[in-house]
Image (cartoon, rainbow, N blue to C red):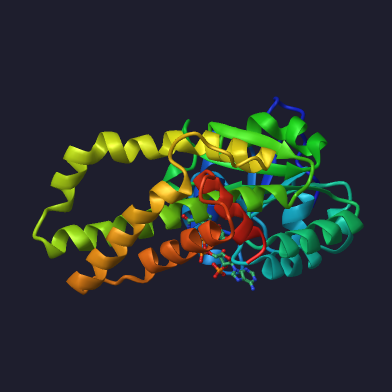
Length: 297
Ligand SMILES: NC(=O)c1ccc[n+]([C@@H]2O[C@H](COP(=O)([O-])OP(=O)(O)OC[C@H]3O[C@@H](n4cnc5c(N)ncnc54)[C@H](OP(=O)(O)O)[C@@H]3O)[C@@H](O)[C@H]2O)c1
């Protein structure tokens, strides 16, 4: 199969490898954006709807890779991504590979180095939305890796998310960004759900609480830039709101949880971290001082 050209207009041909829930959404965005789109999936039947919209279904990975200068990969796991790409053989040389498969930074390094070893250009992307969010102007995808790939295909990648950005030339950076967002999300959600259990124990509706407490809760996000700044500078001195002032409130939360039979593990954990930092002489420091614990547990 010959490579579809980039000639008839400015929209390059795209090959989408992987048609799960997310891959189907990505392929749809390329088709809707007017790109000649070739697709491949281990289970070819999943391509039926895309083919009826104008996609070309490649029979082999090699054919799929040969069809376009831009290969977008979205599979379950980077081991699968590497194995599937490997089945294209030497057809990979010279191609731009944008891998949108989630994984750890070590997995990304392995697939990025292997891909570069095949003579292809590698860009990794971390998708920060669910499948229905693909194509939304506020959807975020973080990219890292080969800048020439990002620059050449920027307008194509923009079809997937209005907020696409190249954050580094290191392909591991996007996955760390993704984990940092998710880690912040889970920490916040765990704290909120613990609080919700406490409120429900008293018969208070959680949504009613949120209506009344939204100014306090939403102010939390505005703390993050100053926490980030002190962590970056390594200077945790603070005039107000030092750890010694957090301690009594955390003790109250812990004892209240225990007394009501609400799981006290989360406040106990927070209490242990703050008490230890104070014992180590950091009573007058910003909460950001706990970065020491996370860095050297
Ligand atoms: N779904 C979301 O909303 C979402 C959001 C953000 C990120 N992501 C990420 O996007 C990636 C795909 O997720 P998904 O939700 O689309 O998963 P999915 O619906 O389970 O689809 C998985 C895809 O991987 C293929 N696959 C799995 N193992 C394979 C193997 N050994 N060889 C060849 N193909 C294989 C499947 O092929 P078959 O069809 O043949 O099984 C299918 O195309 C993941 O990294 C996920 O974390 C997804």
